[in-house]
Image (cartoon, rainbow, N blue to C red):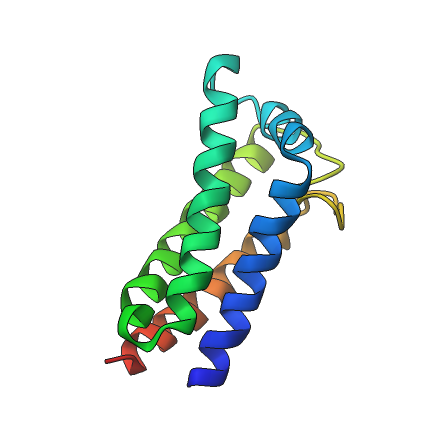
Length: 130
C-alpha cells in the first residue's frame, strides 16, 4: 500500500509543480472554466497548487498518510464535480489544467472518470493507512 501512496504522491507533486512552473498560465486555464470572478482566480490557483503539494508530502509521510489520502480523495471528487459541471455547461476546454499548462489535454467526458479512479485509489490508501 505504501507503493500506491507514493505513486499518488508523485501524481499530486507533478500536478502541483506543473501548475507552479507557470502559475499565470494556470490562472488563465482556471478563468476558462468561468466558475469564479477574476479576482478569485489567483487565490484559487495558489490554493489548489499548495494543497496538491501538501497532499504529496503527506502521502509520503506515514504519520500523515491517512489524512493526506482523504484530502486527495476530496480534491479529486471536487475536481471531478467541476469537470462534470463544465461539460454540462457546454464549455469546450483545450486544456483541463490538470497539470497546469503542461501536458495539455482537452476536457472530455472521460476526464471525470479519471478523477473517480483517483478517489477510489486515495480511499484505498486511507483505509490501509494507520
